[in-house]
Image (tube, rainbow, N blue to C red; front, side, top):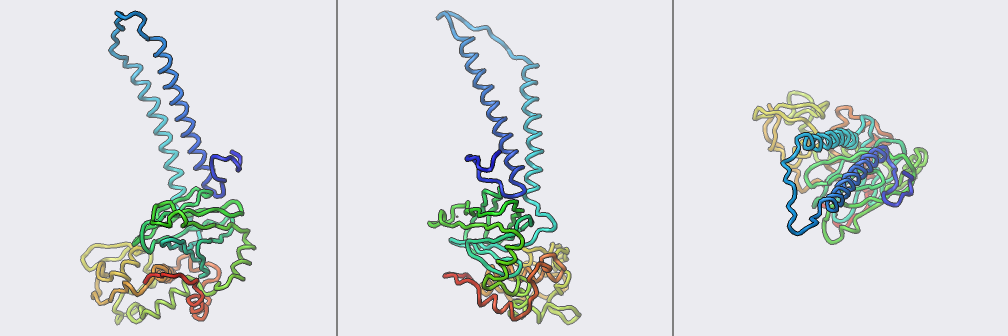
Length: 341
Ligand code: CUA
């Protein structure tokens, strides 16, 4: 399919060709079936029309062979399409292990992005080509949906729960971001642009872009101290909260005997509603940080907690540039009229 084929947006990600192949195969199967049924209807209409007013048709009580045929053939086709579709779906929904994590926050009516280096953008996302990128997304208010047609990716962005989407751009250029979930009066204006750049261009852009200091992890570390998390969460018998070194990605036992995996959602819940799932052996002493910490800050804190477990995000270029840098990141954050929290 040529890139400028007007029916579909251009293919600019690794998954786009497989999504389109699946789509066009479905179109072909549907068109073929519709044609087959249409021709059959027309043929029967001509062949079996009543010729005299007193004509009575021949009564036929069916054919087992015919019924088996028209059941078995479509069954094989739809099962094959199911297997194919599932493969494409898994490809699209499982980020590769080497994907670099970017953060996205949706709010009425804008998209906010944050690079691993800490650089923030609104309604614009600059990314390097041929680099798998994973977006961890959350909403500050209602349900939004991030949709980049050229990448063939779309995922709901929900309040209170992290969702992810990943893509690897294969072509430099500018690609439109839509919000694909009706989210209020300015839903149709909630959009943006992904700029896919060559690796060198991206690095040059990042280096000269204002506010490109600190990093998700460095900022999270600074918040960890600012909210005094470090006064309870440390190693040793006197700690009042669980030690977070190496905790992310593990399964912990809770006070009520059940267990939970330490993932993004659990860390977020534990900051906002600490008494919900208290780790076994600890008192429910931690106060809630609901209303004191923004969604962006929650994401940064999570990045910091992840980095304590050696998550690959921690090794992204530009991270750990120190406390000075992270303080500047805070100051240089783009002004937004109604930042929550
Ligand atoms: Cu956000 Cu529609």
